[in-house]
Length: 124
Image 1: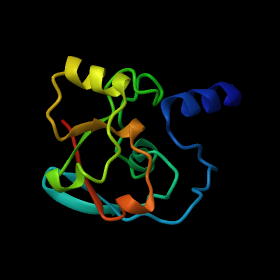
Image 2: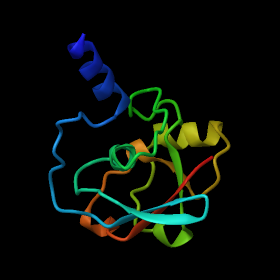
Image 3: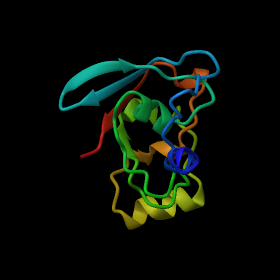
């Protein structure tokens, strides 16, 4: 039974309880309902994993494969130039969901030193 739970956690993008984040820390601020809080994030992991570890439970129905749109978050306009451009699949999905220009899929954002200081809003 524990093996099934582990597979489900891996598929959902949720970090495993004993998973130790790797890579240097990246400063990320999460805004929820007008309140800011720093979250633990590390270079090389997806933003979705860092947000889940911080307690923001994103549905991530597709398991972080960029196919469902349930891990959508928003960024301040000044961050748009720092984020990698969305690939065709993400762009198609965001268009289908009628996402705002400042919204992206957190599973598709790979954290790097260039994103240190990133501020992200939880989409409601």
